Amino acid sequence: MNNKILKIGVSAALTRGRSIHLDTFERAVDLATKYIFDDRRVSLIWADDLATYEGGKRAATELVISGVDIVVGHYASASAKGALAVYGEACIPLLMPAATADSLTQSYKFGFRVCGKDSDLVKFIVEVLTRKQVKRILLQKDESFHGQVVFDCLSKMLVNKVEVITSYEEGLLMVSDIIFVGTYTNSICFVNELEKNKKRNYNVYLTDDALHPSLISDLKTAMGVFIFGYKSPHDVISAKMCVEQYRR
Image (tube, rainbow, N blue to C red; front, top):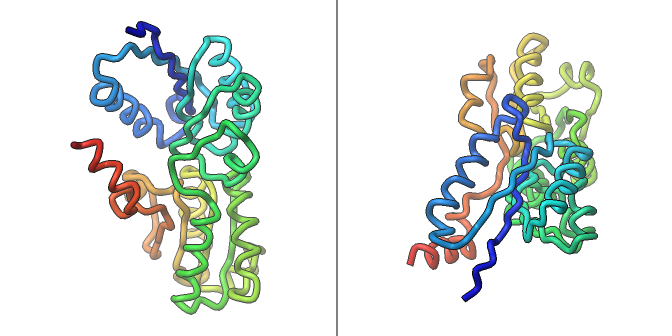
């Protein structure tokens, strides 16, 4: 009988107020410890990655020194990127439940994503805009790694399909549809500031990080706000099969 304790590193932005998604992440870990691990010998080791590249690198170093066998977390793509180089050198796999940048699995041998990826989200956005016959959009982003990656990918895929305006002041006068890509906090700030500056009513589109129950209460606008997100596991055949198998 193997009595070895499985050491699982758990990393995310653990500082209260830094990420709106912390409660969701902690709840998922809590449920896993109660209903998945059963009586197995498991030790969870936590590390705060601050949702930044340097924070991810530092957290990964701490976890490697702690002797973890595997790591789950780093839900910000920036922190996952900083961490993966460290895990690669130590041959420690990272399971990413929310980091969506394509490069995290393409460029790093020990990165394993268990969620959707940015390029798939962008394809979906382009499909929706084309179906709605949107001719022109104002495209804005924040300075996050996620925002930059999705912005660049979306700009390329919209060529010859939808006219993209990136000048904020110019765009407010010319468009009816606006897309903002970035973190939850910055998405809220953008929409609420837009409410003050609007020249007309717009259709505002946000991306997956803005998907949270607090969105409705945090938004201070009467404009239509839509979120491009990923399918629920129950809508994906392969994931649904896994869920059903687990329940059996």
